[in-house]
Every structure is written in structure tokens, then in C-alpha cells.
Length: 119
Image (cartoon, rainbow, N blue to C red; front, side):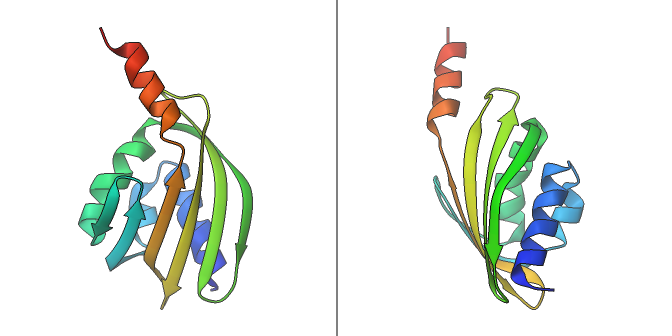
């Protein structure tokens, strides 16, 4: 399987609310660069990503590109607090597992939703 195949399978799993299946594609020593800072290891990655997957209502894949070792996905999500939250992921795959993942997403809609809910 190419990096794009792995990235798409991972994306389908977590956006389909099967986080356990998604984690099958994640290396134990994954390094994730997220807007809030770096995350190292599969358990730390799970603690970061699984809560988001639980508030996800819908995801639409906008574009996907890749080769044997690298893939890029762009998508838009609809979540419980936010109607539109676009994101992108740059993934590196080695031996069928995601070893590096850089996530870029717009944090502003979430900040606005939190501010609107504040007393």
C-alpha cells in the first residue's frame, strides 16, 4: 500500500467513528505536529485526536495526493460546536504505519464557539 492508501484508510476510519481501526495505521513512535505543539507516541496521539473524533459529525474530503512515502489530505469537518472546520494533514508512512503527521486546522471557529458559550 502507498502512503496515500494508508492515509485514506486512516482518514476513513477516524471520520467513520472507528478510532480503534484508525490507530492500526499509527506507529507506536509517531511524531505529530499539531497547532498546540508536538505530540510524541501513539498514546499521546490518541489522547489528542480521539476526543476530536467523538465530536465529529461529518467530514468531507476535499483533496488527496501522495506517493510511496508521503500523503497530503485536505478536508472539511462539521463538529458538534462548529459547522465548518477545515483541516489538512501531511503524513509520512513507513512500513505501512504513519510515523509523522503534521496537522493544520483553523482554530478560530472553535475559539469563537467557546466564547459564545462562555457566561
